Amino acid sequence: MENLKELTKFLNQYLKVDEVEDKSWNGLQVEGAKTVEKIAFCVTAGGEVFEEMLEEDPDLIIVHHGIFWKKSNPSIKTWMKKRIKPLLETDTSLYAVHLPLDKHEEVGNNAQILKKVSIKPKERIADDVGWVGETDQNLFEIVEKIEEILDKDCKLLNFGPEEVKKVGAISGAGGGYIYEALDKNLDLLITGEERDIAEVAKDGNINVLFLGHYASETLGIIALKKKIQKKFNVDTIFLDFPTAL
Image 1 (tube, helix red, strand yellow):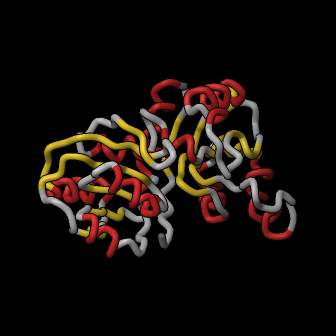
Image 2: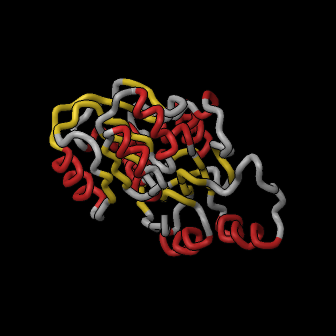
Protein backbone atom coordinates (compact mmCIF):
# COMPACT_ATOMS: atom_id res chain seq x y z
CA MET A 1 0.00 0.00 0.00
CA GLU A 2 1.25 3.47 -0.92
CA ASN A 3 0.21 7.05 -0.30
CA LEU A 4 -1.49 8.73 -3.29
CA LYS A 5 0.27 12.01 -2.58
CA GLU A 6 3.71 10.38 -2.63
CA LEU A 7 2.92 8.43 -5.80
CA THR A 8 1.74 11.59 -7.53
CA LYS A 9 4.82 13.49 -6.38
CA PHE A 10 7.11 10.81 -7.82
CA LEU A 11 5.23 10.69 -11.13
CA ASN A 12 5.30 14.48 -11.51
CA GLN A 13 9.04 14.63 -10.89
CA TYR A 14 10.06 11.51 -12.81
CA LEU A 15 7.99 12.38 -15.87
CA LYS A 16 8.83 16.11 -15.61
CA VAL A 17 5.21 17.07 -16.16
CA ASP A 18 5.74 20.71 -15.16
CA GLU A 19 8.46 21.19 -17.78
CA VAL A 20 6.36 20.34 -20.83
CA GLU A 21 3.90 22.62 -22.65
CA ASP A 22 0.88 20.49 -23.49
CA LYS A 23 -2.79 20.65 -24.42
CA SER A 24 -3.47 18.02 -21.76
CA TRP A 25 -3.91 18.78 -18.08
CA ASN A 26 -1.11 16.46 -17.01
CA GLY A 27 -1.02 15.09 -13.50
CA LEU A 28 -3.80 14.09 -11.12
CA GLN A 29 -7.06 14.80 -12.96
CA VAL A 30 -9.42 13.13 -10.47
CA GLU A 31 -8.51 12.65 -6.81
CA GLY A 32 -9.75 9.54 -5.04
CA ALA A 33 -8.70 7.57 -1.96
CA LYS A 34 -5.60 8.66 -0.07
CA THR A 35 -4.02 5.20 -0.19
CA VAL A 36 -3.26 3.04 -3.23
CA GLU A 37 -2.99 -0.76 -3.33
CA LYS A 38 -3.68 -1.39 -7.02
CA ILE A 39 -2.99 0.68 -10.15
CA ALA A 40 -4.51 0.15 -13.59
CA PHE A 41 -2.59 1.44 -16.62
CA CYS A 42 -4.10 2.11 -20.04
CA VAL A 43 -3.58 4.33 -23.06
CA THR A 44 -6.84 6.27 -23.16
CA ALA A 45 -9.33 7.05 -20.42
CA GLY A 46 -13.05 6.72 -21.17
CA GLY A 47 -16.31 5.13 -20.21
CA GLU A 48 -15.35 1.66 -21.42
CA VAL A 49 -12.18 1.76 -19.32
CA PHE A 50 -14.06 3.00 -16.26
CA GLU A 51 -16.63 0.21 -16.57
CA GLU A 52 -13.86 -2.41 -16.82
CA MET A 53 -12.26 -0.74 -13.82
CA LEU A 54 -15.23 -1.72 -11.67
CA GLU A 55 -14.29 -5.38 -12.14
CA GLU A 56 -10.55 -4.88 -11.58
CA ASP A 57 -11.08 -2.51 -8.60
CA PRO A 58 -7.94 -0.33 -8.81
CA ASP A 59 -7.41 2.66 -6.53
CA LEU A 60 -5.64 4.64 -9.26
CA ILE A 61 -5.73 4.66 -13.07
CA ILE A 62 -2.72 6.04 -14.97
CA VAL A 63 -3.33 6.93 -18.62
CA HIS A 64 -1.64 8.61 -21.59
CA HIS A 65 -4.81 10.32 -22.81
CA GLY A 66 -6.80 11.76 -19.92
CA ILE A 67 -10.26 13.32 -19.84
CA PHE A 68 -9.38 17.00 -19.35
CA TRP A 69 -7.83 19.08 -22.12
CA LYS A 70 -7.02 22.77 -22.00
CA LYS A 71 -9.27 23.80 -24.90
CA SER A 72 -12.27 21.72 -23.84
CA ASN A 73 -15.21 22.75 -21.69
CA PRO A 74 -14.32 21.86 -18.07
CA SER A 75 -17.94 21.63 -16.91
CA ILE A 76 -18.89 18.37 -15.17
CA LYS A 77 -22.35 17.91 -16.67
CA THR A 78 -24.34 15.76 -19.12
CA TRP A 79 -22.02 13.20 -20.80
CA MET A 80 -18.95 14.15 -18.73
CA LYS A 81 -20.86 13.73 -15.48
CA LYS A 82 -21.96 10.28 -16.62
CA ARG A 83 -18.45 9.48 -17.82
CA ILE A 84 -16.66 10.07 -14.53
CA LYS A 85 -19.43 8.74 -12.29
CA PRO A 86 -17.69 5.34 -11.80
CA LEU A 87 -14.53 7.15 -10.61
CA LEU A 88 -16.38 9.25 -8.07
CA GLU A 89 -18.56 6.42 -6.78
CA THR A 90 -15.56 4.13 -6.20
CA ASP A 91 -13.20 6.87 -4.96
CA THR A 92 -10.75 6.01 -7.77
CA SER A 93 -8.04 8.47 -8.82
CA LEU A 94 -7.11 9.29 -12.43
CA TYR A 95 -3.63 10.43 -13.43
CA ALA A 96 -2.86 11.52 -17.01
CA VAL A 97 0.49 12.06 -18.72
CA HIS A 98 0.45 13.01 -22.40
CA LEU A 99 3.48 14.63 -24.09
CA PRO A 100 5.77 14.06 -21.08
CA LEU A 101 5.28 10.32 -21.65
CA ASP A 102 5.82 10.60 -25.40
CA LYS A 103 9.16 12.35 -24.94
CA HIS A 104 10.59 10.73 -21.79
CA GLU A 105 14.11 9.42 -22.29
CA GLU A 106 13.56 6.16 -20.39
CA VAL A 107 9.90 5.06 -20.45
CA GLY A 108 8.68 7.38 -23.21
CA ASN A 109 6.72 6.00 -26.16
CA ASN A 110 9.32 7.11 -28.70
CA ALA A 111 12.36 6.00 -26.73
CA GLN A 112 10.67 2.64 -26.17
CA ILE A 113 9.92 2.19 -29.88
CA LEU A 114 13.60 2.57 -30.71
CA LYS A 115 14.79 0.46 -27.79
CA LYS A 116 12.52 -2.41 -28.83
CA VAL A 117 14.48 -2.66 -32.08
CA SER A 118 17.87 -2.29 -30.36
CA ILE A 119 18.39 1.38 -31.24
CA LYS A 120 19.66 3.83 -28.63
CA PRO A 121 17.82 7.18 -28.59
CA LYS A 122 20.41 9.90 -29.18
CA GLU A 123 18.88 12.98 -30.79
CA ARG A 124 15.59 14.85 -30.42
CA ILE A 125 13.06 15.47 -33.20
CA ALA A 126 9.52 16.80 -33.55
CA ASP A 127 9.58 19.68 -31.06
CA ASP A 128 11.76 17.55 -28.77
CA VAL A 129 9.00 14.93 -28.38
CA GLY A 130 10.41 12.28 -30.73
CA TRP A 131 13.75 10.49 -30.74
CA VAL A 132 16.32 9.59 -33.40
CA GLY A 133 18.94 6.86 -33.21
CA GLU A 134 21.52 5.16 -35.40
CA THR A 135 21.66 1.54 -36.41
CA ASP A 136 22.86 -0.88 -39.06
CA GLN A 137 19.84 -3.09 -39.67
CA ASN A 138 17.70 -4.35 -42.49
CA LEU A 139 14.42 -2.50 -42.91
CA PHE A 140 12.30 -5.63 -43.10
CA GLU A 141 13.93 -7.12 -40.02
CA ILE A 142 13.01 -3.97 -38.07
CA VAL A 143 9.42 -4.19 -39.33
CA GLU A 144 9.23 -7.86 -38.38
CA LYS A 145 10.51 -7.16 -34.86
CA ILE A 146 8.00 -4.38 -34.25
CA GLU A 147 5.07 -6.38 -35.63
CA GLU A 148 5.99 -9.27 -33.37
CA ILE A 149 6.22 -7.01 -30.31
CA LEU A 150 2.93 -5.26 -31.04
CA ASP A 151 1.26 -8.45 -32.32
CA LYS A 152 -0.19 -6.65 -35.33
CA ASP A 153 0.45 -5.92 -38.98
CA CYS A 154 1.84 -2.46 -39.66
CA LYS A 155 1.69 -0.33 -42.82
CA LEU A 156 5.04 0.27 -44.53
CA LEU A 157 5.80 2.90 -47.15
CA ASN A 158 8.89 1.30 -48.65
CA PHE A 159 10.48 4.25 -50.44
CA GLY A 160 13.92 4.38 -48.80
CA PRO A 161 17.01 2.18 -48.47
CA GLU A 162 16.67 -1.42 -47.37
CA GLU A 163 19.71 -1.11 -45.12
CA VAL A 164 18.82 1.67 -42.70
CA LYS A 165 21.26 3.78 -40.72
CA LYS A 166 19.20 6.53 -39.12
CA VAL A 167 15.77 5.91 -37.58
CA GLY A 168 13.30 8.29 -35.95
CA ALA A 169 10.28 7.53 -33.76
CA ILE A 170 7.37 9.93 -33.37
CA SER A 171 4.33 8.22 -31.87
CA GLY A 172 0.69 9.11 -32.44
CA ALA A 173 0.09 11.54 -35.31
CA GLY A 174 3.79 12.03 -35.95
CA GLY A 175 3.59 11.67 -39.72
CA GLY A 176 3.21 15.42 -39.95
CA TYR A 177 6.90 15.70 -39.12
CA ILE A 178 7.91 14.02 -42.38
CA TYR A 179 9.67 17.18 -43.58
CA GLU A 180 11.81 17.39 -40.44
CA ALA A 181 12.56 13.68 -40.84
CA LEU A 182 13.84 14.41 -44.34
CA ASP A 183 15.87 17.38 -43.11
CA LYS A 184 17.54 15.06 -40.59
CA ASN A 185 18.30 12.52 -43.34
CA LEU A 186 16.35 9.68 -41.75
CA ASP A 187 16.19 6.37 -43.58
CA LEU A 188 13.13 5.28 -41.59
CA LEU A 189 10.43 7.20 -39.75
CA ILE A 190 8.34 5.14 -37.34
CA THR A 191 5.07 6.78 -36.35
CA GLY A 192 1.46 6.08 -35.42
CA GLU A 193 -1.60 6.76 -37.51
CA GLU A 194 -1.52 6.74 -41.29
CA ARG A 195 -1.32 10.09 -43.06
CA ASP A 196 -1.31 11.09 -46.71
CA ILE A 197 2.44 11.55 -47.02
CA ALA A 198 3.21 8.84 -49.56
CA GLU A 199 4.28 11.20 -52.35
CA VAL A 200 6.55 13.19 -50.03
CA ALA A 201 8.10 9.97 -48.71
CA LYS A 202 8.58 8.66 -52.25
CA ASP A 203 10.21 11.87 -53.50
CA GLY A 204 12.36 12.07 -50.38
CA ASN A 205 13.45 8.41 -50.54
CA ILE A 206 12.46 7.68 -46.96
CA ASN A 207 10.77 4.64 -45.45
CA VAL A 208 7.77 5.28 -43.20
CA LEU A 209 6.29 2.67 -40.87
CA PHE A 210 2.80 3.31 -39.47
CA LEU A 211 2.14 1.35 -36.27
CA GLY A 212 -1.34 2.76 -35.67
CA HIS A 213 -1.95 5.64 -33.25
CA TYR A 214 -3.01 3.41 -30.35
CA ALA A 215 -0.33 0.75 -30.84
CA SER A 216 2.44 3.36 -31.06
CA GLU A 217 1.46 4.63 -27.61
CA THR A 218 1.17 1.36 -25.71
CA LEU A 219 4.89 0.82 -25.11
CA GLY A 220 5.38 3.87 -22.91
CA ILE A 221 2.50 3.19 -20.55
CA ILE A 222 3.60 -0.45 -20.23
CA ALA A 223 7.18 0.64 -19.46
CA LEU A 224 5.84 3.08 -16.85
CA LYS A 225 3.81 0.26 -15.33
CA LYS A 226 6.97 -1.81 -14.90
CA LYS A 227 8.79 1.17 -13.38
CA ILE A 228 6.04 1.78 -10.81
CA GLN A 229 5.66 -1.88 -9.93
CA LYS A 230 9.38 -2.14 -9.25
CA LYS A 231 9.58 1.02 -7.13
CA PHE A 232 6.36 0.87 -5.12
CA ASN A 233 4.50 -1.71 -3.07
CA VAL A 234 1.44 -1.93 -5.32
CA ASP A 235 -0.29 -4.37 -7.65
CA THR A 236 -0.52 -3.29 -11.29
CA ILE A 237 -2.55 -4.26 -14.34
CA PHE A 238 -2.62 -3.12 -17.98
CA LEU A 239 -6.06 -2.57 -19.54
CA ASP A 240 -5.89 -3.04 -23.31
CA PHE A 241 -8.59 -1.14 -25.21
CA PRO A 242 -7.46 -0.64 -28.84
CA THR A 243 -9.10 2.16 -30.77
CA ALA A 244 -9.94 2.38 -34.47
CA LEU A 245 -6.83 4.52 -35.07
